[in-house]
Image (cartoon, rainbow, N blue to C red; front, side, top):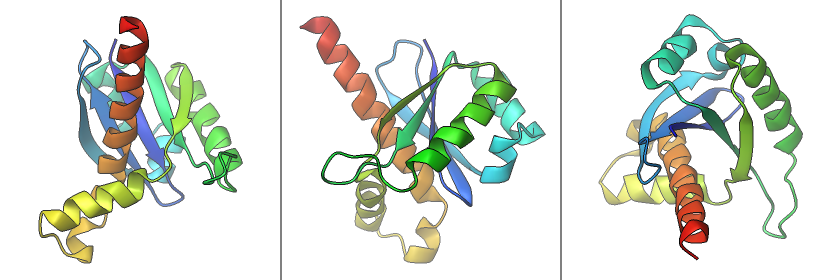
Length: 141
C-alpha cells in the first residue's frame, strides 16, 4: 500500500511517500499549508501522481509523551484533508523529526536558507520511515 506522509505546519506541509511494498520512505515536496488543507489543484495532482491509500500525519508529542499544543490544530487540519481526499488518516509521533532533518541537511553542508522548506519533507520521510519500520518489525515478530 502506498502511504503519503504529511508534516503539517501552519505555513508549509512537507510531503513524503513510501513505495508500494512499504519498505522505503522518500521525501517528495513541500506545499503551502492552505493548498493542502483546501484540496487545491497542486495537492490533488500529488494525490493523482502517487495514488496513496492512506495519509500518515505527524503529531507533535512532548518529551513526556503527551500531545503537544499543536496537536489539535493538526488533527483538525488532517480531518479536512481526509474529507477533501477521501483518504483515511492515521497519526504517528513526529517528535524530533524536524531536528533530525535539520541535522541531516546541515551535515550535507546546507545553509539555514538552503534548508528552508526542505526540512519539512525530510521530517515527513523520517517519521514515515520510522512508522514503516515499526510495522515491519511487528509483522516479523
